[in-house]
Length: 340
Image 1 (cartoon, helix red, strand yellow):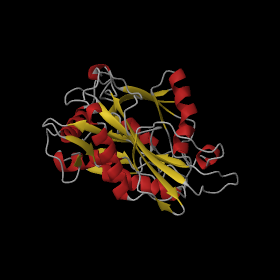
Image 2 (cartoon, rainbow, N blue to C red):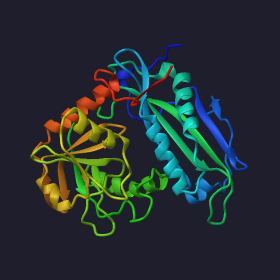
Image 3 (cartoon, rainbow, N blue to C red):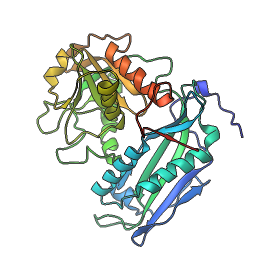
Image 4 (cartoon, helix red, strand yellow):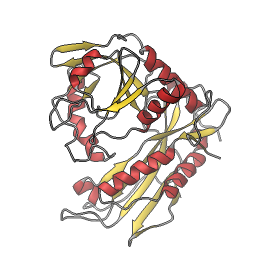
């Protein structure tokens, strides 16, 4: 059944679709879970998620390839990362098979909401888990829900890609030995004041430094950094407090195996950034968001790639990865998960 959506006018926001997946954890085990048309949920006012932010989430997309297949991109890595997040927050680990089944069932059930190839739009998938039973003392909940909904979204950059201006942030995103390496809701709550403050001061995003020494680059509120040196090496910051971005890991593979570039995943000092040729923010929503200028407390770092377009290497990385995702470039084994 066709849906009345102008794919070319979609923004990046929530649109209710007919079906979502729900599974419950009670008495020490997950039930089978399944689809529901009900987008509302009822939980205790004392639920663990409301009292102590016991929740984690993921984000991935389904889309139509050039040859007409509906696919998702490396969902097994999302399942793995959600398992890591759950374990760190003392939530029950969701079996990978159930995660993948939820993805398949939700996309198949909402297939009419998967945008056509070439529209620039995708079906965004949001899996999440939370403590649902009452908790008044500081401890893990005893019951949990895993849910996955879908919403069609437009391209992250409406009207074309424009390099961003970001600032070196005085706020900390994550503490050493904390939860920066998992996709916990509380990490994103921590970043809200900082991003609102950045926007009010005319910046697009924040560059967070390590909270221990404030000398090493970590990430933004929702994306990993990717740098390109003047001799064409791809460099990504390494830290135990950085979320292991699936997009970043995929771009590094593409850089090395498809483009023949040298890739370095290592700690990056802030002072090094002054010598880089290109900078991008990588994540599910935009793949790569180019950065043209970084402001470090009044000192401007103007990337040689400029404020008009993506840098040359960043553009090649973007074009290659999106080509793999859309089926115009052959994908490595297991990267595209077709929805029947």
